[in-house]
Image (cartoon, rainbow, N blue to C red; front, side, top):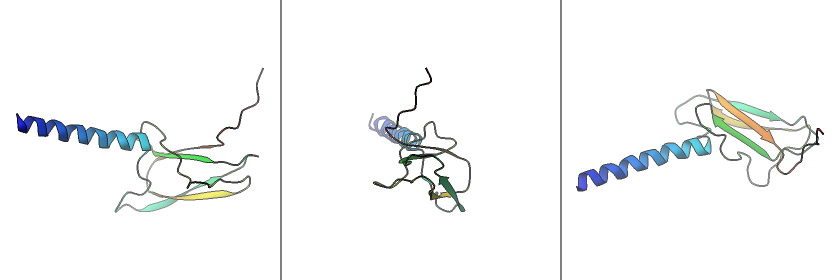
Length: 102
């Protein structure tokens, strides 16, 4: 009984670890892998204050990758160091409403 209980605990821990990677988008730098740069250029008239970057295999973009209190002003850019590979990137301004199309 104790062996089965420990096995279940290890299985749950492994699943939670995998879910954490999918929810957060994964680590930007994976140990031992070559790195490159993703540059987000703000070509809008608003400050970009949210940049979500995730491994292409993750099911969500995850959390904002900009440091707390940092935004990308119009005409500026911000660089992220990442491991080589496929990345999904989404950027925008939190709380900025889009004009109505009606």
